[in-house]
Amino acid sequence: MSKKIFTIAIILLFSLVSFADNRSESDSVAVVTASEGKMNIPEFILEHIGDSYYWHIATYKGHEISIPLPVIVRSADGEWHLFSSSRFEHGHTSYKGFKISHSEKYRGKIVEISAQGEEIRPLDFSITKNVFALIINSSILVIILLLCARWYRNKGTTEANPKGFVAAIEMFIMSIVDGVIKPCVGKNYKRYTPYLLTAFFFIFVNNLMGLVPIFPGGANITGNIAITFTLAMFTFVIVNIFGTREYWKEIFWPNVPWWLKVPVPLIPVIEVIGMFTKPFALMIRLFANILAGHSVIIGLVCIVFVTVELGTAMNAGMTVLSVIMTTFVNLLEVLVAYIQAYVFTILSAVFIGLSQAEPHHQKSH
Image (cartoon, rainbow, N blue to C red):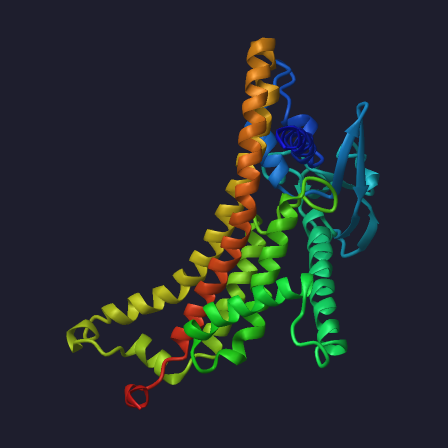
């Protein structure tokens, strides 16, 4: 058993090294300091968790193996351009006046070079690594749920209970519905169940795929603030569009002493601010936890390369420590993947439930 555990740990380490090597186009500039030839750990981590126009698979004998992705940009003259990101040769060349910027302002982004030599950010609808990963992960989620739906359509009428994979998915669904959605939302829970289940499984699948060190995993989807902002905005819109009259009454004219509402509307102002802090908390919580997990894993892997100059004995000892700690954190992140999906869902359900407030005389019945 111990040999199997050791073998798995070694495999995991090499996989995570590949995971850490999943870099964007400007890595050759950012990761290694030219004058010293040393690894720049902060830049290395930032480059990994960022987006890119390639999907880097591995580096073999100095050659990068990557998947070029389609670039769709609109230039300053209004003309649309569609071409492969391979035209940039990993950020080393320009194409049709466009290039991958290495400047501080637009680093890693496609820019257009004006007649004065300035970098201008074009309208960019390119299929980046995160977008491509989002398509793959969403497709995986749809396939999983359709397979479960197929079982209920074909065998659900003849067999009492599902087994295996379908049973596991049903367990997840029922635990969220019975343990989160029903008690938090209230009697109108069925109306919001599709959205809340979609949010849970979307976050959970993307969190898990982000931990897979090889293609098609490894993309930092839920650690991207644009993704978490969009998810939080969905909850914000649902809460405030479908909120009851009593919900809005409690915001603008709550049942508190009059001097807290007139002449200075202290409580209403606090309630209005709370409308925006709730989705902000949803966005930051998910973004920060997933981003931190990716950063810690890459940082632990980098210990192997940083300690090379300290001698063979020190490097060997730190490599063993790196394997142990990386394995532990990676397994911990599997739990975090579920917890963060669960927390986002339960907070969204609580906010939706609060927006379904009823008049007090109806609650007493």
